[in-house]
Image 1 (cartoon, rainbow, N blue to C red):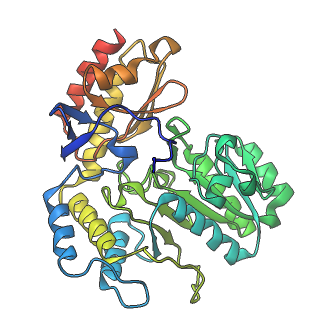
Image 2 (image 1 turned 135 degrees about the horizontal axis):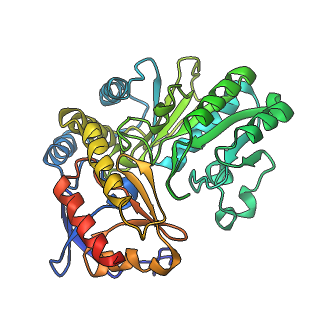
Amino acid sequence: MNLFDVYPLNDIEIIKASGSNVWDANEQQYLDLYGGHAVISIGHTHPHYVNRLTEQLNKVGFYSNSVKIPLQVQLAEKLGQVSGKKDYQLFLVNSGAEANENALKLASFYNGRKKVIAFTGAFHGRTSLAVAVTDNPKIVAPVNQTENVIFLPFNNEVALEETFKAYGNEISAVIIEGIQGVGGIKEASKSFLQKIRSLCDEYNSVYIADSVQCGYGRTGLFYSHDYSGVEADVYTMAKGMGNGFPVAGISIAPKFKPWHGELGTTFGGNHLACAAALAVLEVMEQDNLMKNAEEIGNYLITELKKFEQVVEVRGRGLMIGIELPAELAHVKKELLFTHHIFTGEAKPNVIRLLPALNLTKAHADEFLEAFKKVVS
């Protein structure tokens, strides 16, 4: 049997990882500024994380949600404390797409409506509902197509108001990334998020804050949307939540009253997943990683803006997009294969930096030195 060939692969096999570095099969060391799509939040193979998982595995690795799992309660309490959403409720799943899928379903149960507002440049996942609100027709299969999704221009308050005036009593939810990842590191404006909040309040629609990539402390705030000063009804999270272990969740406002069977999952919130997620939050809190993300991120953004060759630097904290002119399309590949630095990209010419939240200034300087050589 062959693998289903859907991933364009770099000819690199990673066999060891520690902190913000990884090593390939030839023992070549790399600086990891991508963290496997913003997943590695506290660094590779962090000792506390490894110990937490090992200890849990030696006790019990899995049982279903048909029994009490105290680790889930501990995780909910810790997440409420660190995120500042103590009165919210937690439902645990396995991936970002699954989190968004359940958030949209929860909204529809809540108000009995079908229409959803999403935005140009959005990426919310690949499962049925999540891909339907993703702005990429190429990955939307015919079976995923629906007339219930309304795509509006990102950060366009007039279009948003007009759509609510036209369809307000039919709109179940508005789903938005605080900073678009795949869309090119584009931040929702403070006033735009405030407008979403006020319109959702007026029409009893549900404000879903997709924090899968832009959340979990990456921007210096726990949820990047919190920059706006208003709260969403539902926050979805995944990537950085388990530092590589598949775990995701939705944080749900107190106005939603659950009923047995409303949502469900086999693997979501299993013992190992909760141990991984707890380890991440414990390290984030102990080492003040949100503050570090803000400080090192601000440093990188300030220094990158000094390069005349750069079209624009966007983002917040350690979620940074570097837009380059077409003639510098080679930069990502050269950083990887010449300077041994992993970065991400957004089409057509945006370098994405999504490193661990404990990235050091020395690592940031290592990248800046290599970047200078590549663009000069």
